[in-house]
Image (spheres, helix red, strand yellow):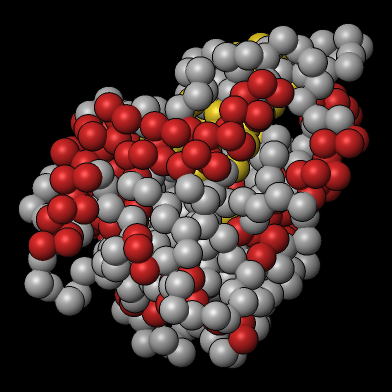
Length: 466
Ligand code: SF4
């Protein structure tokens, strides 16, 4: 072992009594040889690569570079030199939520939103008409996609039929209250989707957790729920709310959320009705490397069954201002070494998913760019507003112009490409031919997406999930 890197102070090997621990019967050398040869990796292989060898503590920097290099080579083989991004808007409908996930500071207790409560909660709820106006303006500016992930507002129902069922139920465990009890009525999920579906813009919304909320109290299948949402205008589903797909971790960080099997069931159902999906991992909190690789295995298996996952999005836990940090359950998020290895092992392990995203919102510009040489090939979206990460103490900005994207990607010698959400449309951008703007959105004509004046407005706007 040479040059031992920084190890996380909070990696638990026993604190939470986890059954899964990063121990294997394999070796780093063997796992690296398999990765270089393009062989399918086992869970043990993944753990050996993520830990740079379980036989020694900490990260071995020399070994880490070997893993990054193998992932970068694989990226070049699979997707070439293009770096993609999408012109998108985040329009999140409400911060009202009772779920109480310990890693989240996006939500505001829904009690505070009730008309009977005078407390100033600082959160927001948008009516469908407000969502429509926000999306309409962004579509006119040239966006291709609107992403919408919200808190689980108790007044939300899937549609009128669902509301009638919730209203007539005498169960008190359904996390439901009538809209009349709140200052602002968010309408139904279907009304919000319909409202955001402006001029054929791509609507990316309704995580498995939101779909669960949209069927509570019923026997409806997830196919039924996603089918109704699709009819209302839903185009694809964000695979957030995944966190770590191992129940012993979920029991610690998000005990109010659906379990691993239900998350997978909902995603498979979305795929069954013909919706594309993305998949995420949120790592760097209480979990260990075995949990991370078990998560990757579940995602790889889901893709084997569906073929519907367009991209994998690693999300590094932003710890500041979250209950996990404030209650002393974690001391920090993942280290940079861990971030780089997670991107690289995602590329190597997920041999059936083409695109791995680097999130500049989570990593920042410089490190976000670095991730593009660790196995990632997608650089996210313009995100006309970003609320969730910012509320959780994230330092990195709210909006990214096409010119910035082109300059950054060109600077690392790669090819900037505007893409559609599903990657089926791609447009290579000539860096010398600026100024640059989106051309794929329903009303995009190449005009730059943002101008300085509008950036000022956007800074005051709200909006995004884990
Ligand atoms: S992560 Fe989502 S479900 Fe959990 S508390 Fe935050 S907004 Fe609510």
